[in-house]
Length: 426
Image (cartoon, rainbow, N blue to C red):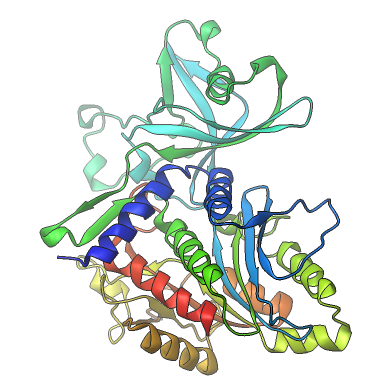
């Protein structure tokens, strides 16, 4: 049976995921949690009068929060936990109300790299932001109204020999039936946000699984949910930073940087390739009176813990994993290593992570890819390249990554939060 503290952490993670069906909701929910413990929200367009304290900034679907101790100086480094708020799925297209043969459908575009088959025959919500003609933004989230129905086996006798889905014709979800002239998916979204549909001028709306996260398995040791990649890391960072804010230690500035659009390559104003993190660091350093020399010294004293999900060894496909490094669930966070710098971990960073884990009383395990199965990448190499900060890639081990419903061990998200607490306080 998982420890009580781990179970409490998982219950809170389930709540965070349930209230974060889109990156915009994830950032807004994080902001509400930070507000509740005394953080100050800042507007990027305002002049800032920073001093010791706890702050955050929301940019679209991204949020960066930090704790500046009274001991911070112009050369203080940053301890940054990097993560991302978005997950693979489907995004609503322009002219989104479609349909045929008596069915109402939503026109969607594939977002990132979802496991398409996992989205079939599931109840889905639409969630994201609506922008009105006056420029105001409103979060929207429907009830479960969508479903991508699979073709019955009677109409495709070879389906179990290999399912092939056409992304254009086979993935448009249904949301109603009747005369198509009566259908309007944007009106449904506007109603969920409490706004006039005629005032909607723009939108960023995505699908999300409606089913809530659930603990399961022998001994209640597993957790299944949508968006574990990468809300496990965002949530762990929020928990760790709020704990750290109550009693900051050291001269460094502890920071959570949760970016958007990682699943698309991070090239956006709110992604890790964009200027968001660098601009905030520059403004914080300016408030501390840092010159060019001070800024360089501060970055040299900084470190980024890039926290993103990784792969547990799959019992049905063990040949897809490295034969010597076979991560298990509930055995601690992964230290992710790649010779081609798809992960940014180096020997110095690996040693530092080992120390943080030891001090936190948390086990960890190394992950490296099978040479025949190249790995993906994370925000880690992007941050290391953009800012020159030493970066270490870590994360919670999952099965079914990029599925509409992923799974992890109950203990591992809690372990990650404990290491993050140690990292922020180190």
